[in-house]
Image 1 (cartoon, one colour):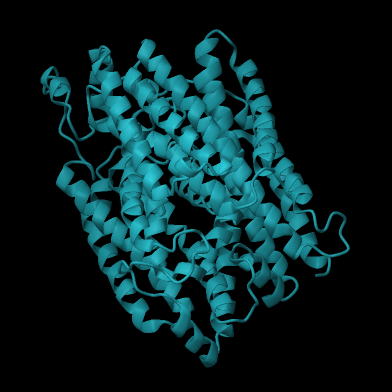
Image 2 (cartoon, helix red, strand yellow):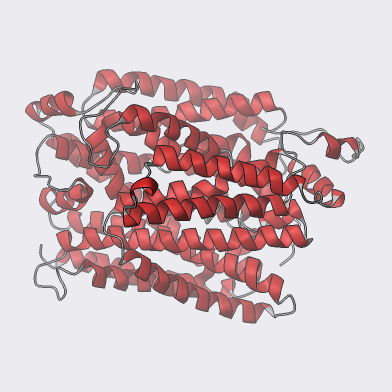
Length: 594
């Protein structure tokens, strides 16, 4: 590779830093300005930012490798990893999150459990666990970009073979604009990155489509798995999922749990909490999924080139950089690399900003309520730097992308799923129950995680066994902890229910509310029947768009057409069942305090 492509990437990196510094003045006005952009960011910018923050190099490398091995049967894995969250977000979850009027995903617990001992304990426990997840996310990103860079860097460049050095350099540049620009800088750079990634994705899809000769298409049709039906096994055990039928129930259950718990529990909530109105936040939920379409097209292009045998594949996790390096011309390669760098930086910036917000808002500020906002923002700067350094340390100890991500999902996130669902649907669930549910699950996750790492025979458990154990432990801890402690203060419950209007077991709370306290609802959450209808339609729309476009890139027309027809039909139906209801929602900005 010459120097043209790296020059394009370097120019892009400095532009992103400049944008972050440009946003610094506006972001320093106060806590809500620094961490939520003052609730003045347009919905389409938030949607683009949200989708960009989920579009990272490490994840894209892994997605390509899994599609290469499992074909469309990897659908069950993507379902379990919240790739179809947009259906639940547009259906109801985005509105529920927004109506809490919180500033971070963890502060949402304060709205639910109040300020008593249990509420404080839940908020602290949630903050510690989510910050831990975000730190592991930084390490996960570090592993992926370190694998990616040596394949595409010019051979004459210093430290060419050491991807960790260049990965660290890019991450430090990202940290600079995150620290200076706050949330406003994050979403503005994310929007630019989303545009660049979309262009890159479409170009990759087009080039892959044009390179697939009839002979190559014949190979794709022979090797690519297009069916979604469950089977006993799949042909490769690259990721330890050869016994497909054993993982299938785990993935399906995981998908329902993770889609019903919120917007992810970490940086994703910020995009909804930062919306300007209820009408806008519902649109963010839809746009989130729509902006991901170019990513699926890019993944399709890379995957089909590899399956057709146009590049030699030794490590499935390195297919992406191999194809970029060998198949695309100079200049265009630089644009694609800049798009992939954008993907990496957008995710990292969101993680750093969220970790800083949780530490400052949910740990430091409750402990020091009289501390000035300027001091709190300065602490946020320090937390951003510390988070990056800790992430470096975690990433340096992990060699496999799939290994670190699988443990994060089954362990750290798995421990939060049940408590996060119960907080929406059960009035008797309290802060003590939330904390005992978290820590009991985390204890089991830590034991099984270290057991696998140390290869202890009786603790070396596959995910489909360890994850259900974690869920059941969390459920028992949550219920027992709640029933053995006093309920959340009724005034707190009344306020939460009145604002959010969740479904579930809220009878005792509704019994003490008057009709004046509960005005008739409008919008897409008016009834549970309407919510379920929109979730199903939204899910089918996303599946049709993602897989229909994916199959078209591979010239698999007969398989693509049913997905595309389903997408069009669901889009028409959603116009009447969802969009018209969204326009009934308030367009008034929220009443919030810094």
